Length: 163
Ligand code: THU
Image (cartoon, rainbow, N blue to C red):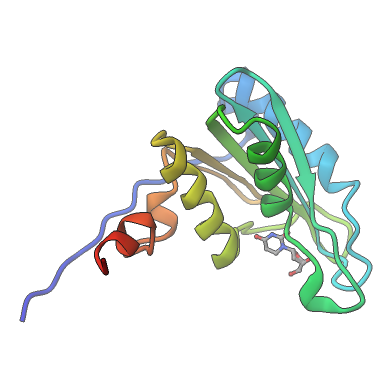
């Protein structure tokens, strides 16, 4: 038996103005997109902004449905749109933010497992790290890539091992 430890490096900031201006601007776009979310069932409005490697900005937000499993998260709405329309351009940075059920900026914003898997696929597809910024009312967390969000992940390489 052996025990393995996995280290995750997260830079935590107290305020947005501690980040570079390009990240501040991207975060403001994510916050603006959260205001446009369609979330009448959860009232949890999530916004995402992506900066692509060529400087293009893509935003997205959660889109809920009365048939609840059909709704989609902000991150997946934005990532799939970006990858569909700019299939040759890697995502450089993704910001995720949210407005909570009381209409205030949400604390402890964290992407769901499905969105982590989709971020990882995009990172794997382009072989370029995607920086992740989690914009919460109580902190702003920055990760240099998606790996730390999904340790022991399943990816395209896993499929190759079965053939
Ligand atoms: N949601 C997102 O948009 N992204 C996440 O990573 C977590 C959850 C949405 C889905 C649903 O519309 C609402 O937040 C409550 O779960």
